[in-house]
Length: 379
Image 1 (cartoon, rainbow, N blue to C red):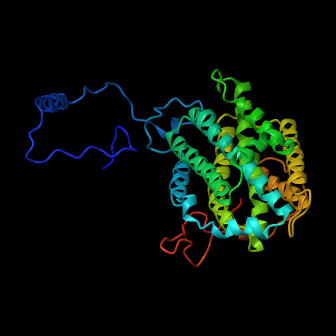
Image 2: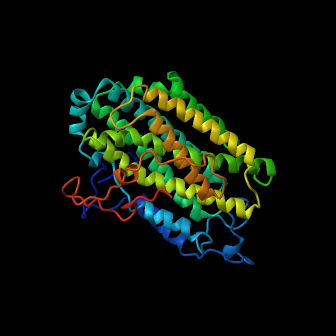
Image 3: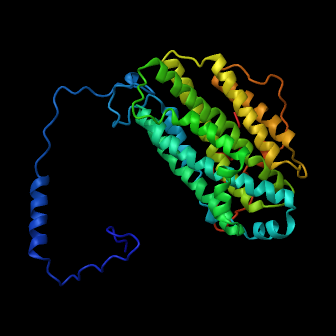
């Protein structure tokens, strides 16, 4: 039985039926029953929540009343997210251990370890951003509820990377510290910190136009670039190994993460668009251009580092061109100008490679054909 005082310690056995309860316990129960017998006094002159009064930010309705919804699509995101429930322990990693130590080239090990180093730091940053900077700004509970699930998922992703690192037998301290000492990884993390930390301020006021514009830009960066482009590209090198039958356990872990991230980016873009409509605000074109260029330069530097020596079927040029192609798709969804007209799909196999549709169970006793993400839609 679970011990609610200390869940890691077994609870004391329940009293036997013939044992009489203590007098103090009887008195406490009597008091509780007496207290519960009085109905609460009604609050007078309280109007029910009108969904038309709800807003993404700066709303004035009761944040504790879920329904009626103004944003039923946000609730749908929450329901769909719960269909993609998994843990890293569900996936067999034994072949990955053999692959890493016996089948990967030095160049492929370099790619694998640095991808994990970048991703694990990024997901912690994502978790903090949603939990500490974004959720509290939302003034409709259906939005917050999905974002609460998102915080959990970012934690789960961080566990997944840690599980891969530990299972392969890598030096955890060294891998986790790379974002501090590898310039190409550190640059991306510092850009994200700089853009997202501005909305962690305790004195931010979204009724102020400058603060609102800054929040919108930070949210677009987070949903459209950080999750929508950088995470997408972050998984691609591992999927390239999977295509050749290598590191298939890790790739399968990332396929589940990809399902989550597709929803994260899609939800964030939809929220950003809703803010633009409700607050009658649009991002400054020059600021957007600068943001895309900074993100592309950082991704180019990252690609040149992790793929300084191309691996079979994947190069730094592929990685960078795919960033530009996906950036155009994210900008289109936001209703903004494409930053890279004419960019081509460098990895036409990626959507299908990242698809988790399969005809077998990966754990033999567990069905994995969930509804959400059965066919990933990158739009």
